Length: 134
Image: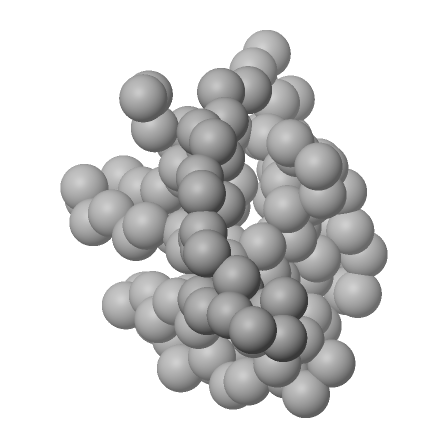
């Protein structure tokens, strides 16, 4: 990981005047529908649904609204853990299916979670998790 050296001057109390932002090479991710709609994932927790509701347990979560009648209002949650996304079914009506690279489909139980593969089905809506190249 490349880092830049930054100099800052201290005031009379020895405190620095400003906090500087760290620049890290964090991967950027997107969620892409089969129809080509793309949603940049800007948080480590993302709540998906037709009209997703905020979750007090995940106050900084990004809400992503998906326009599909087979998707529940608050359907699933994606969580980035290290370098891997996990998906949690939030008790959705039509379920969450994780599709492996070999095409194997695993349906989550309501409230169940699993590592998210590149392809997910929320109801009838197919989504792909795409890591942006830098």
